[in-house]
Amino acid sequence: MKVQHFSIILGFILIFSGAKAQQLPLGSHYFMNPFVLNPAYTGSGEDVNVFLTHRSQFSGIAGSPQTTYLTIDGPINVKGVGLGLNAYSDVTNILSRNGVSGNYSYSLNLWSGHTLTFGLAAGVVDHTINYDQAIVRDVDDPSLFEQKMHRTVFTADLGLLYEWKQLQVGFAVPQLLGNKARFKADDGTINYFDMQRHFVGSAKYVFDVSAKQGITVYPMVVVRGVAGAPVQFDITTVADWKSRGWFAVSYRSKYAIGVSAGVRYKNLSVGYSHDFGVTKVRSYAGATHEFLLSYQFGCDTRKRLDQHDRELEELRQRTTQNEADIDQVESELEAIRQSEQALSDSLNATKAAFNDSIVSLRNQLKEQVKSAVDQSKTPSDNPKGNYRTYSNTDFLDENGMPMAAGYYVVIGSFSVKDNAITFQKQITTNEGETASITFNKSINIYNVYMLYTQDYPTANTERNHWKVDYKTAWVLKLE
Image 1: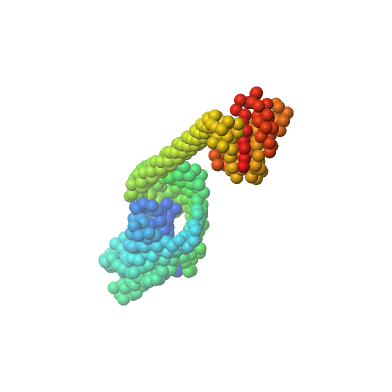
Image 2: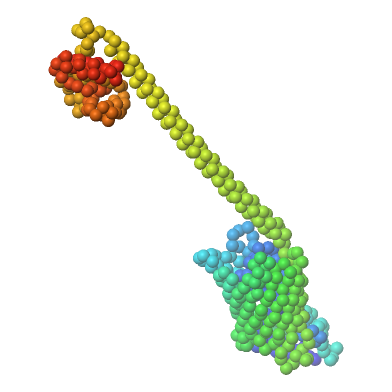
């Protein structure tokens, strides 16, 4: 084989790869590590995630595609920012691509529950032609002595991710710049590997089967497109148990049906995927296997923090309950204090009323004693003690008017008006005669009298009549 001939064949491979097929490596575990689909997923989880995947496509066929990914990503302390690193190797026959890129994402809260994340990946890809891997009939062909050809080009990916509740919709543009890798053979022949700009869309909706146990089911659709090649799509359904593992079934358009399963133990996850071909050449294409190994850093810390948060919440609830109990006890104590105060006020009021009654009774007794003493006295203007003389300006009738001058036959004297009225009614009822009341404002005494007259003999006769039953009856003279 001449070098020129080999260059023509190689050029055909490169041109065909650039114009007629998807250039991006395929993978089955993107639902576990969407970071490889879209840089906007960088740091989307709560922990630092490390994924190692290896895919062997069409195994058993010499030169079949072998793809290995190593990714690491996670959130940082800056709110809404995620960082990641992506290194991969994709080898198909004598062609290989080895790339590494750094990823960055930033999330914006649009409004309540709606988030938009921007993602950017930038790095380099080394394109290599391994002449020593070529299978030829003529071992003396001088092209076998060609050294490996390397071309390293800069590449960048752009991504967007919209999230609302359980819905995720993503869009990415891998190989955004569309750079070319330029290869020049010893004979001067130049070929290019054209890094076509791709478009990748994805959609996912998570259904909570058991939020308490962390069991979810979600469908995921991925669509890939590139100019000059048919659109490819994947439809995947995943059942995920956060603490145990997962099981997934996929359909890849016009290629295969994939089955994936994985287990989790603490921070470690191990998964396997197998593709079953659906094309006519499936009997000759060989099997496709993909293995996954991942580890989560910070998961134990987060679990401890979650446990701490739960304990703190329980403590807060107990504290709230204790505060409620304390409030209830304080309320009951306040009610008791109010009852005690009401009882004390009632006792004080009763005591005050009792004291007032005692004072009133004492004053009444004093007045009665005073009245009796006064009756035993002989007025200076009445040597015989037949009557007592006062000024009529000191006495008022029941209507509050001054009393007329003359003689009044008094049969009772009281310091309390209610007692005088009671006695007045008693005389009216028992004796069948009308009694009247006069008030001595100078000494605050109420006198109950039976007769008013201008004639002393008449008054004296009446007094003697009443004195039979009322020993203290006396004659009041007003001037």
